[in-house]
Length: 231
Image (cartoon, rainbow, N blue to C red; front, side, top):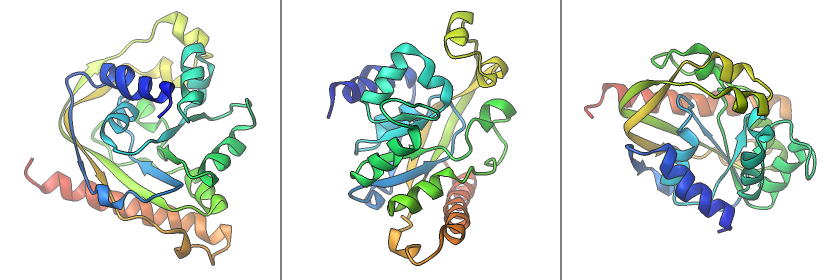
């Protein structure tokens, strides 16, 4: 484990999840080697929750503005994450492929920043961007769906300083955010992997929508089951 990853998993994750109790279920589904892990995304603390809870080392596909913040840019890269749009040390799509092919795990939030723009924390999952499925197909690695289930949560007001917004390029996500979801208790649930051999014989045009549909169906079932189960 690199020093940067240890810092991300330690002080950074603890500061972002202070007051949150998280538990893990389904860790037997965490495959060895490279994989794309896809997860729902309703809180800015989701990456920190996964860092703190998952027993394996993971990187993240991060929002473009994260790659513009001087400290975060360096921490992301050294901790094995990739910011969308980053061109150093190589174009970001090549960075993603290299990490997967070399046996690393990369977390992707396929809803993107919809949870920020919508500010509706009771809404169903937003439509998935297809990038995660294309990455898995091109690198011939499995997709592992996951969900973060909020067992108890609350909403807090949120403001970003003008200085941080300027350094980040004044992104719409930060300008529009007025509230964020905070988990008091949550469960990270790892679901059944979609093995690479299940889509190896498909064309990319066939595999991408299939992966999206299969991953989303598992995630929706898990969230629905959690919503009707006693906490």
